[in-house]
Length: 204
Ligand code: ATP
Ligand code: MG
Image 1 (spheres, rainbow, N blue to C red):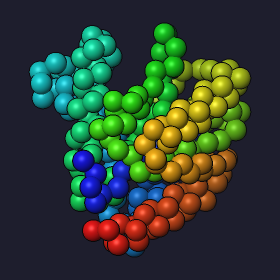
Image 2 (image 1 turned 90 degrees about the vertical axis):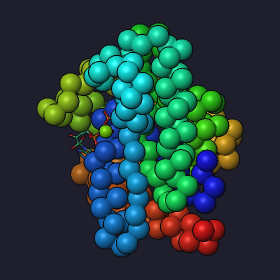
Image 3 (image 1 turned 30 degrees about the vertical axis):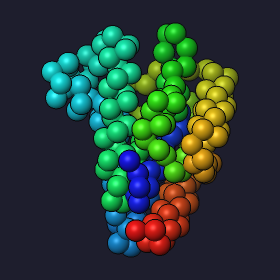
């Protein structure tokens, strides 16, 4: 479990710019000698399922029985918390995932109990900006959503983050990432790392 380490969970609706902002912030942190271990929740889940011989590729993951997926989700949280014993771990994930059955929580209570997050970062932008970024992004196959659907998803992510914060005592930082302002957003995340690193130095 995260005894001396810190778990920072970075979330935001698909296409809001999480990976863009995280990459720049982690780079800035490294330049200042602050080492941040970057983990993608989906990748950790895939590695666990593959090691157990449950899947051979990522696309088979979502076809696993839901109870198996939940167990893998729980084990992934343990693995990430283990990595956080020694330092700052940044988890790139989603608060709520769009599924045909509704929004699926990325951090249900059994994940939160294992993950023990210290900070939630919510990367946000205007729904119109998010829709346009999804349309422009040719590197990914993104689902087309109405602006109103994106707005609701983003509002629900705020509610989910607040619920997780109440359950875990983690803090929440809402970081705007408006068009052409990824650098400013990354700077804010970097400053957060610096504050955490200073605190981490005290407790280790
Ligand atoms: P996912 O959850 O699907 O992984 P993401 O939140 O990580 O998505 P990114 O892949 O970082 O999103 O960004 C989506 C697209 O938006 C990319 O094409 C990226 O270049 C662009 N983008 C990110 N931030 C900004 C910004 N501030 N202004 C303009 N474009 C941006
Ligand atoms: Mg991403």
